Length: 142
Length: 142
DNA sequence: AACTACATTATAATAATTCTAAACTGTTGA
DNA sequence: TCAACAGTTTAGAATTATTATAATGTAGTT
Image (cartoon, rainbow over all chains, first blue to last red; front, side, top):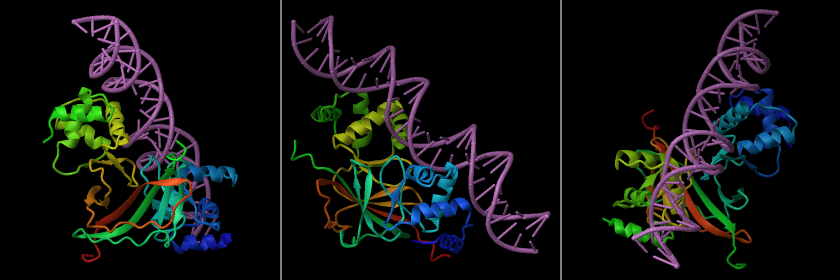
């Protein structure tokens, strides 16, 4: 369990002013055992329900994007109508359950390293993401 | 060059009525040498500019989704504000140029098959997508 | 304490997509 | 051939996710 004062320090380290709202959002996002996947909407609900706080929607967007830019959150590519974020910023891949719209982390043992043999001249690789989409297997019960 | 009557047949095979609009869209999408990546907006522009046709926006959405559902088009996962589609429906991966927002196909020689060692009980794998994000390499010139 | 640059906020604006309900059109079968 | 019906198209309204705006608030510095 990370103390709030640590969030203040952390925010300062990232070059972000430790405002009330940002510290609160750190508490919701990073006071966790397991990595956490969410959409902006999930987060807004969590803040208002679980924490009984009111942070403006615009601030939630601003702050999540600030955290992402500083590498404190990772955005995950899922073709969808909304953006997903991940508190696990290390290189790792995901399963996406198309039934429940839930993300599941792959750890490094789940998927072998992806070997890319092509490169685009003048461009550098920023990220390599594998997304495995799964859905309930209805073949058997049909 | 595929003839229009072939599109009519193809549509019927897929269980879709070969309406004027659908045949026109087939012409724009599939009368090509190379695989084609696009957003709905790209497609609407192509139809009105290149073909001088007017097809309602709702119809373009309906038709693209119908084609996708029937496996005649593939949707590509890119974290973004819009959906990307691909006329190449075979299993293959992509480079995404973050500067120009362009997609580049990887053929099977560019990326080794992805080996997934985890499986989720009761779920089957619908797709495995690798997205390699690239951007201009400014390190050297800075 | 006061100044200033950065943050927050409510609200408006925008963008992508889906919904609606009326008009239209392939297809089928008499 | 033509009527009938189910599937389609359409314009426009509605919805959803996100970004912009401009006024107000606040953290950090002097």
